[in-house]
Length: 456
Image 1 (cartoon, rainbow, N blue to C red):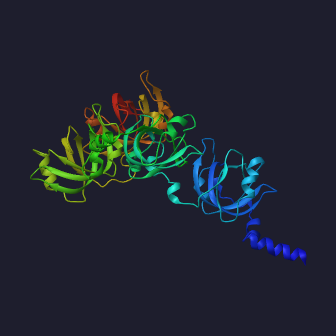
Image 2 (image 1 turned 30 degrees about the vertical axis):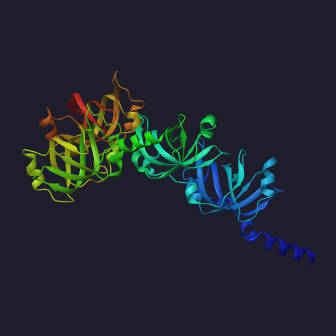
Image 3 (image 1 turned 45 degrees about the vertical axis):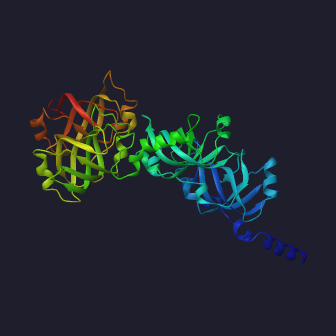
């Protein structure tokens, strides 16, 4: 009878204990296997004697670089068991009650989730604002941002920063759409070796800081230099400098000086003034004299364009809202782009129409074999699938030229080879010498040799 009473008391003190003790570690989602990082969740049960606890996972704020998990977020919403709590961390379990929120380091050891050490603590009830997630287009970012400090965590040397704008993007950044972070919050870590600078930061301060996203599956960024706190005057200057980011037709500092080709859907057009607006769907070419640091940040943005004149006006007259235009564009000051050389209607942009180059292939010079996928009529270019890298030229700057094999790429430069271009059809195999003329562009240019395999 006393045993029954004791069991009833335990079930009252720890609601749901019977259900949670039946958790099978083999039921963990495959995406969490190999995980190494931080978890946050609401405690269901805990046992200080065995060093175990169960909790419902609410956030995965950090993923370490050595993590092997393919999809860490797949654990969110699951109730899991964690074992291996030891030493002084057992004291945390003793004072933890069901319903409390725990943040802790966690590792999947091949069979189950274990606590490897370093950090295990009770925290405030879960608030999504404390654990912001990154936009997909921002992952892999390296560069400088400006933002306002919202919260600090002196124990972990982290802070939550609301980003006002992206100042610049580094050449080795992998972010496809850096500006997607603007207006959103992120977790910034890595202040362990910058403690003095961290302690001088205050919530509400606006800072300029270099950051990098090391773990593509993690939601945190790491600082690369000491944040610079902007004075009231500096804030005003920054606001003036980047005011264009806030409006539909503005250009931010990383877009100014653009030279290249844009493709986008028409939202407005005025043949009388030679102007129009588009939502940019592709940036197929960036010319050698380009000065913009981040041309791809135009994607999804509405830009105003002026300077349409002469024969190009006819294209504007026959274009309707919603149709797609491709045009040469330059920015030489002001809030608008200017049309130069080309303006023509094209088909709506579909996936694969404007492939992007692998970063490790950028700067390549050499000889490729490729299969023709499609032809750009009137543009004298091709979409090809690279089947082989025959030779790396002496001046090639590609880190890994084989990264292009099996990938599609836009091949341009057939202005002086129009007859050859006209003879090609999808499926033809060609050999050509090419160069990547501008690190920020996604097209290759043919150089001195081009021909069909077996006929050149």
